[in-house]
Length: 108
Image (cartoon, rainbow, N blue to C red):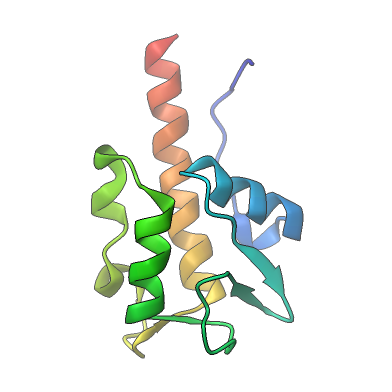
């Protein structure tokens, strides 16, 4: 597959695109519904991931070491409300995808 460098705004992508992006990172799917990112780890179904739910999400996703620095709860939770929103998750996924694209270009 030929990958070109692009900047992705994940907030503008469709629901299947969000699912695909998260599945790339380690097999744990996340899907959007009703204005929020829900996952099998959103135990209370409020549309956000709190710290405990996020911990389960990270464990299932098996993030590569070179991307681990992107997945620190307090860094993703930009508004410091104690939970990760759809926008916050989309921003972080965008950052990871940009790093992955740069890495793939270096290998080719």
